[in-house]
Length: 188
Ligand SMILES: *[C@@H]1O[C@H](CO)[C@@H](O)[C@H](O)[C@H]1NC(C)=O
Image (cartoon, rainbow, N blue to C red):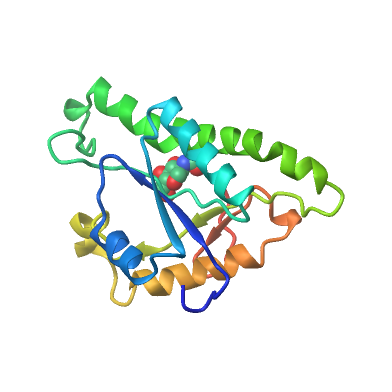
């Protein structure tokens, strides 16, 4: 955030996760960081969030989806064997990982439409890319870090720096492409 003096971040926090790092960041940058509560499994909650973004900012320059879930204590376990597969876990993962983010995009486009129609001629086309952050030292990867080769477990700062570099340089011909943290295109 220090490198981007004009940046206002709007973050969505899932109801399942209260991230201490996020709260620390909010204390450090109370004016520039706006955290909105969102339950990706409830459409009205997504709507309320997108409405408040519109009221406050009019539109967004970047939308980054990083709302994946893999496990939630006492609720969702990674399906390591077929025996452990539960319908409720599969549905929850699908709702949060696939359905929710698409609804966010749809609702955000709808609420910012009036703004973007006005600027249609001048406006940059929307570019949508996929990113692989590498293996980052977070709670998500912690249970799997044993198998990571030496030097391949990145700090959050390093990975974010790499990904921002890719995002900031994305052009319309990059649409639909999948990039690794180092800028290499990944076939998919
Ligand atoms: C959103 O990001 C999460 C975490 O990277 C990923 O698991 C999920 O598939 C993404 N969803 C969409 C619709 O791109």
